Image (cartoon, rainbow, N blue to C red; front, side, top):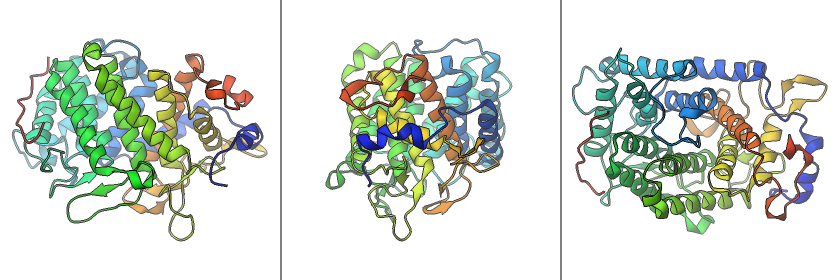
Length: 417
């Protein structure tokens, strides 16, 4: 059966034996991620996963007020190293261009912005080995003033033409929102919210129960409801929501926060009500049969589950916690008779099964973003547990015992402080 019923939840403890990842398992997952993340979105997603895991007080999901401290703890070193590597190679990547430019070139207009928060943090904490302020400012101006847009102002995900991908909601708006909070520029907060609103207008498919399409506009499209794309969108919205909620502007942006909360819940309902399989996984294309080219995808499943825990912590919304816990428990389950071997990770620590990151319709064998999503899931769940497992018994659901373990307008970038 496709839908997750109470009966499946009741038997969950018998199906999945692992409740958490060991330090050794986490180390293997991190090592594979570090060795494989080479493209801009992979680097940006790795930086975010490490930030959330190693230095949660500097993550937007922390309950601490933003901006964070300007004193960089030792745990921030890996994130700062990522920023250093990217900025030091920026001139080579961009053929020694000056002025507005992405943090690195890879054919996407949106993906390089995913590295932007780590670059801002390098500048904010006083790292002076590179021009981090200039790199972040050039990335911002490139997005706002040089990247193609739709007629109503949606920033393209591609360089060559105006084209919108669900992925971009994770890459661009969180950078805009964080830049806005750090520089006290509410125009950028407005733009972050507006970009999400525009992307939702284009990609939300009301005829498919509000699942998001993957790609629209431009010379080609993907009207399918890609699981990872829905995860990218929900996760990006949550990062913008958390940035606003923990900033000095929270009281002035209550309506925007409520909208973002509702839009994440909308994606959760679209995905979890009808499309989660009893094994805790989504298919690569959520509402398509597994017959033919479709397949289970642990990568998008992990990302979506992480957003459920994040929403519970941010907004006390916990309707789909049982489903997320089913996914997490089964993704991190150990093999029968071997407590050190995981069902959904190979011996080297690669998550499986996963979509090919470079060909979204094909099954792959190694996914850097999938490794990052596994870390994000583990971290979000751990924070949820540490905060009292809020909502574990919410909604009258059966809960297993395991629960208690602006259009075309040029915006002048504010100088980073």
